[in-house]
Length: 96
Image (tube, rainbow, N blue to C red):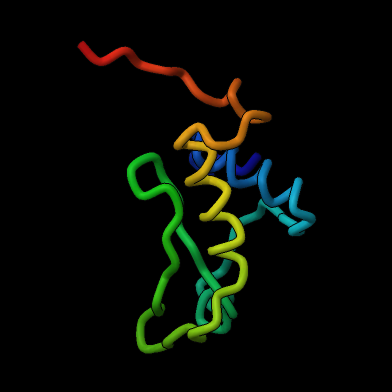
């Protein structure tokens, strides 16, 4: 793994979901010029889960974002405990 990639549970979950859904992934450094011609960009993290990027500098990304919702929907369902096959991804916390 590249030293500039921050490892995390959300990132790992998204990569696993992408693999399970047949969405190809490649982990590598990305040049700024690639961001300016991208069809779709999203960011992920614990609090945000997965959010799409609207634009980079003066470049507006296309309105159609097919990959982000494909990953956001199951990720949200997993976090809410709706998928039994992913129960081992969760750590229930008792609220008193």
